[in-house]
Image 1 (cartoon, one colour):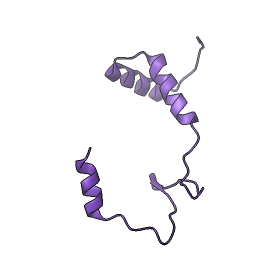
Image 2 (cartoon, helix red, strand yellow):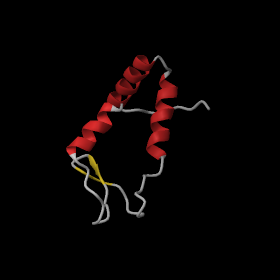
Image 3 (cartoon, one colour):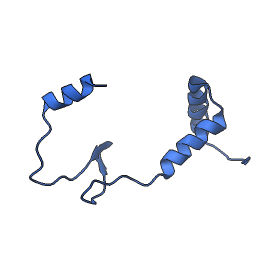
Image 4 (cartoon, one colour):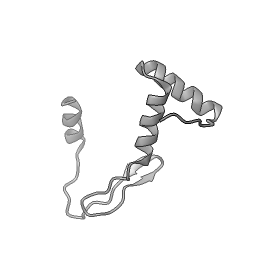
Length: 80
């Protein structure tokens, strides 16, 4: 669908740069970014919301949940 949007200059530059990096049109990248922003926020299985502290996602977990150790994180990173 064709439409006209007034974007702030910094937003236009960022989307245009991202489009150039991806080899996609500005409209395609803008649509993907808007679609992502409109997705419902994820919740944990307990139904609690994912919140953010200093920009980092924080989830509430049950008190009896096993801790995630640095070794577990390292192993997960090696799998990627």
